[in-house]
Image 1: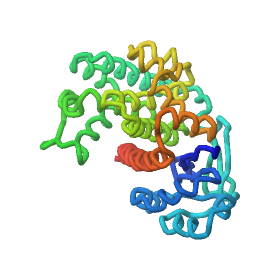
Image 2 (image 1 turned 180 degrees about the vertical axis):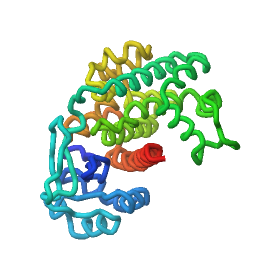
Image 3 (image 1 turned 30 degrees about the horizontal axis):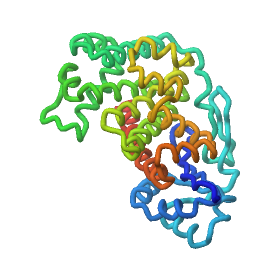
Length: 331
């Protein structure tokens, strides 16, 4: 019996500024069919045109010449091992002069001791999230929001940006909350927990990782036949799954005040149910756990091509979020 084909994994790399800078394509030797579909996908071509998509020299040379040519034509760049530097240290990493891209789990290391301002801002954001998850009154949400200028600025900037559908400029928090709606407000608050932290060297890559994970899970939940409510739960599971990394605190402790549904809590803490299996699969993909991903994609009735191309879609969404946050930081 032939082994189950696997997806092509997009592993995020940081640039010298420790921000998301490229995606490294990681794949098994039997991935030719999925790589061919990837190279022919317009979304991947669009992604590679604005965000470097890299092939390590060794695996690239093992590909059939025509497949390698098609990947290059789609925008992939082949890089030597010296261009990639790995770090798993908690301290801010530095690239050697010969390297262009940083890989590794350095941004998943426990955070350094937060400043007083950092702790206060995150505590408020968590309190806001708790209120939204409990479907509190808009006035109660607004009262807490007024205490954090950074969150307030980002909220008003978000609803006044293109694509929100507002016909006039929004200047009040209550207007902004109504326009966003509770589901989008939950998503935005989660993103802001990871984003507006200029004194945390992990912030850029953590935001990218959580945005990519949550959007990938939402898209794959749809492919797996889950309904719209479960697709939203899959997105939230991806978001919440890295809160413990952000705060350097156990995830069960952080989830207690949020009063999540039993289904979502069990998915996060025990990988139960379809959403829990989706979360486990993307976690295993991040670690390139070949056997784990192969088993779970079969259980969830997902194809390697679906997982690969949904990751490409999610990468587009992640880059849009990263640009919005960076623009807000400098706006």
